[in-house]
Image (cartoon, rainbow, N blue to C red):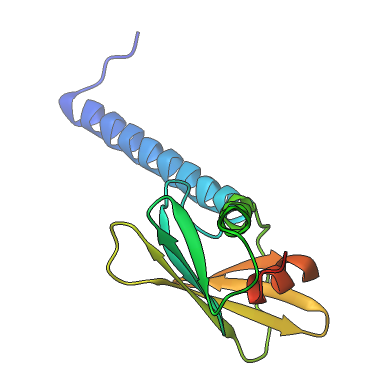
Length: 151
């Protein structure tokens, strides 16, 4: 059995605490790296969309239904389906894409300011920039759908 003085036990405790702190720090770094590599949605899961504004159109919630302005030729059910589709996408992380962004503004219940999503296109690459600086990859179809919903 080890016989340590008080000073010896203090040193053992200090080394053990430092080892635990280092282990917890490494676990946090690994979790952040894993989180950065996961697919994620455009909006938080529990977000209730009030208005989704594109470059030249707007879809807004009216009671239980939806309407667009200017009229996109879509019924309330079709507009609701677009909003649900957009919210349901799980997009892989992506790299920065150059070019001028097309900005979408999305108002969510409980928030006074809209979420601004930048859509980028360059040389066949499509991406969305979420605040503060999260890049997500888009397919060409997803990019087009966000630019202008069609029937």
